[in-house]
Length: 286
Image 1 (tube, helix red, strand yellow):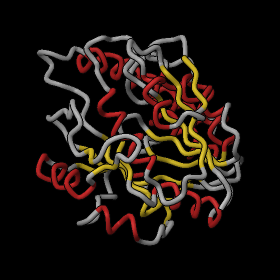
Image 2: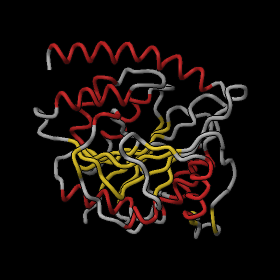
Image 3: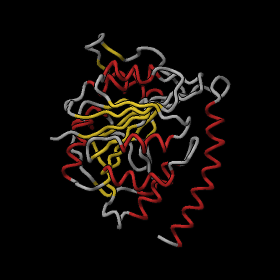
């Protein structure tokens, strides 16, 4: 199977109390142990205070990397990264995500089975505990790997959550070994591109109108509204993809020691007004 491009935003951003390097290390190790290593990584640093690019280069020296100059401009950063992708099928994956060994292989199978179609993979997460060291990392460089069974046990004990309609299987490792089974996407839980695959040009056309968005919240909602409304003219549709799950690691401490939560909630309320306005506009002029 031919190569695909994987776009990852390297967000520690400019707020020095946000430390995501240990989380991103687990992400790179999980990607370094894929059954199919024929893929390109594009890492975009959204004006982080620490060396997120240097960490990526430790594991993927050939990765395409650049620094986006506008802090918190998450949409603009992703759009610029997708534009630099060398391949026609692009997977967008949030920073701090751990994936299982067949992740890239599953996305490649989807791109071949469903050409021109947008895919959404499973996304799960946990809250309240930040893994700030080398927890669940086995071995030492260059032979590190993630203890995926131990990590999943920790995630479930901590309290696993998943996107509406798409909970994780009883065993993510078993889910990873299964069929991709594309099925029509359920919009009832909203849209997200924390773990999704796109024809490159579709992503650019749908995301670009919101490239000016600054701050956290509802960028996925804006994207989903446009994608759903424009799918016919873009000659695409959306499928859910089994066996391509990612687990997003917790990166927020309590509000007493991590001010990023209150800051982000503020902009989320502001962006909600933009979502409502776009929904009304698309209803009048689909």
